[in-house]
Length: 485
Image (cartoon, rainbow, N blue to C red; front, side, top):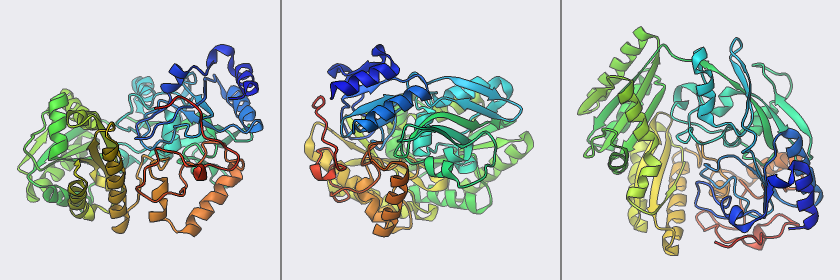
């Protein structure tokens, strides 16, 4: 990396907040995805002004850069694929203001998701979006990916709970999109920015909505002998006009792994289990929970269990949130997909997922947000065996094709990043992608801000992206010369 750039970075954030040591860089070479690439330097700015100074230096010296929060992302969005500078938000972790009367908070991007709810709990408020990684993931990353979570069925995803963002543009300017009010005039640039995966700028402050805590919450666990019966129950619950706060499903393989890992009390012989959360007023919650239980029994549930206390509720949800980590019981590595399908297609698609696993000789467990059709097949493999890596990537692409073929999408909440960019052609026509590229060029004309994420390269959907091809690089950007893996 150019010495002139290193000196600019140190001037911007302080000598001690820049590192180019190979051992340090390796710690930033991965996120929760399958891809790996190390940056050439990591900087730790403390505020928007420092972020802007770093961005201006990178733009002037034609160096690619990418922002990174906790690194829990699952699509490679925070990986510095072309080396360059990684801008960590680890020092920007303050909750700047809480306005209980107007139910808003102003936070920095490095604030951990769960910390917002913890900070406002005594005020009877909470921050609703709750990805499974909420105890570690940060708000900046949630905004970048428009993260969902277990309770997005009733409450919506991150974009439904963000009022405004202060961002640093690729020109190094500090501007606000939206504000702290529910409505702002003009074009909805905030809507464009949320979910843009760090390709349009870097969020430095985020105004979020706070929601009153419900009077009570009840959790049900319904046990089915087959995925088909559980899927029918999901459709019938929604068709009956019941919208639970959360409605999750897991198949036998995933419940077996979870039970061995955290002892959540899940039956390991069930074909599938449903977990439903119902919240609101005491009187209505009891009626709604009973109605969900009735639907499940009519559709073949052999058991419907209502959590008897908060401890049991926590144990059930801890089990669900531990699903990804529990896959270590089956294999050294896993590859998680993130397709979306209509609820009525669940049995059909899950049967095809099973067939895909057999075709590639891979074990696939299924955990998903059943209420909104967002599936998370967990593909078990050993990343030390190159043939298994290629098989896992190809199997994941086949799953995405199956989702799109049935009227679904290639991503519900994990984003496109590196992982799914070459599958964008499966869902979008060339004219659609060209329009998106024009929009990106308005914000990011130099292509240096999180380069080459989201948009297709020269590869086909399902081909490994682990080895960079020069044809994949934006003009004027060279491959990284960082630590090898």
